[in-house]
Length: 196
Image (cartoon, rainbow, N blue to C red; front, side, top):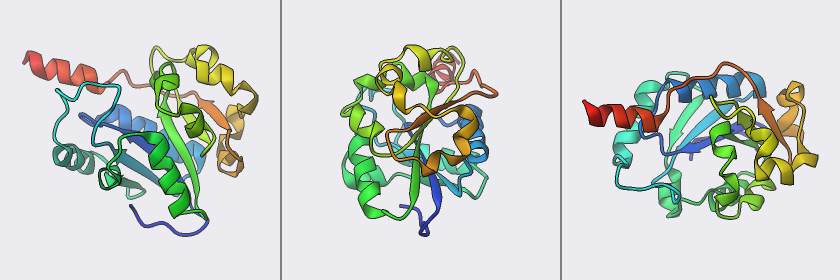
């Protein structure tokens, strides 16, 4: 796990990063600026239970690609979930919460994940562990209105204008952040590579 100090505001941005791309950097930039983060951890997962592992590049290759792409020193590349022997976000976040009770964490996710968030193992536990910042993605802008997570936790929605103080809120608390969107996706990049 990256080193943190008491009182820091840290974003947790998990994913397979298979491969990492400029869209990930755009989400990172928006999160760092709008949420006032001291650090943003790119938590490169060993695997995703909702996705096929057949096209998943080896973890060390994905970590190296993330390191090459993310030049901002506030972005910390980590794969500590492998040591936990889990690919379930709820378990990871619980571990982080216990390990660093004096750090203010925010779970960062793209809006494209919001539609299927209720399929994640213990998704309601995730929503009640740390505040969540949902960053807009192409084709997913309306997910914050229609997703099961958005409807279930509608009462806990924080106005986008207050995103900078999301870290002060007790979970469940979440916000949807609009902004520039990148059409890049790891799935599309893999498909293009397969065609060439």
